[in-house]
Length: 261
Image (cartoon, rainbow, N blue to C red; front, side, top):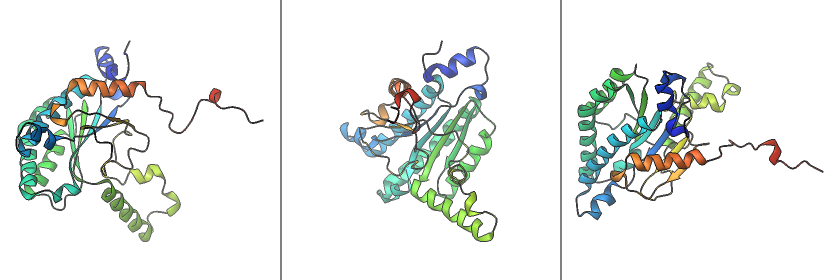
């Protein structure tokens, strides 16, 4: 018997059940702490980011092994452009290297890769790589990896509102037809299952403009580990905490409600 969501996919696959038949488990990660990891070792920040890429590779493998079906990672925010130009260039270079070195492996292993966020401001070659990554892996269904690149939740929500406003003005959308479910379909992250668990590393306790709408009923786990040290054991620990949570989505069991007198 599976002991919880961490074992569900593995157990189901061993019994011949397809991934599509397994209840989705969507985990998001704010990968924080690369700079502090490098500083603690008297290294430049670039080496911390490089170690962070290695941690992402380990974590993707661990996620599949632990029964996660969908993962969204925060790679580069709209606010990260404020960092020194040299650091931004290094981050973009690491993204290029990751796509070039790992895309084919991810494709072979059944991973669907989707990159969401604003395209404005991104180097043209990276925009092309983003499109190529999705095109080459769009038919995969073993695991879904969503990378938030040049992403900010507030900007994503504003873009959705503008699109909706345009449709209402054009008469193609009635205001009363706008529901939370329909609104979510206008976000760049639409199409994935609801977010179950959001993890932030490095001991910080904030969302930093990440998945503000999508995290409405997600569970949060904050871990003290710096991202470059992340992998199987920290992810399993976070999933174990999640498995013990009582998710009520705003409701309570009838037996827990005292009748009015």
